[in-house]
Length: 271
Ligand SMILES: O=C(O)CCC(=O)C(=O)O
Image (cartoon, rainbow, N blue to C red; front, top):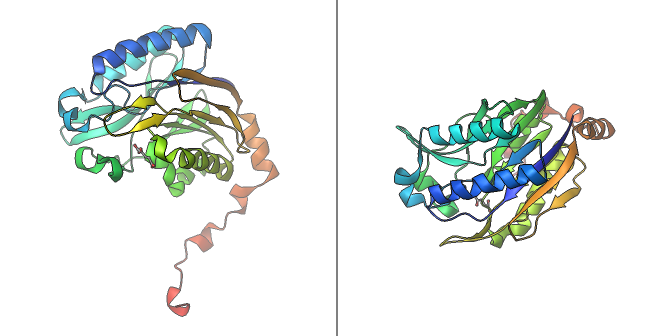
């Protein structure tokens, strides 16, 4: 399977969902007219930004409005959408939730950020997801993650051992740790021998600057495309058969020694 993937690397107006949705509608239209991707990504919390203290007012009730928007755009343009994430308000709390819509407009996957980022106070305002993020897109096994999740290789691996060949990452990753962003994403691609397609935002909010640098990385760890720090669409063609050939060249998955990893370490003998 070959897909043209495209990250809408955009600024986000702080706490202004209506404005952000209107702007995104134009960007989706423009991207479909120019780049014509098969898979379209948006950044993390792109409707509200990190306006955490107001999420109970501006978040999306059960994610209903967002699902309708993704579904409408996906069907209208016949494109698969990784809808970044949005703030989903529920009776049990507010979740940082990704929806995936396929070309027919069906919502085929939902994932709520599992690891809340304390440095940006997420744990004070958001509830953590409890479910995995594996899904099938046009017959290919994929997984979706949200920002801080990429610091947890064991979480990502859980999905690639179940066959994920493309990891879609959405983020509001700050400029101060841009070097971590690049290295972590490249490491996840190399160790899991899969594509990583990662969409970050640009601009600033009251607490952080965001560097863009959305990335498309192949299963050998090469950066196929990297964004600047400006508003743009970062796109490339990916060929998922490359995943199989890299996994054949260095058979990391069959060389794993899971039975040993699962044994307890006998630390008392050593210290
Ligand atoms: O892990 C990091 O350095 C950034 C994470 C982050 O900004 C987030 O999860 O929103």
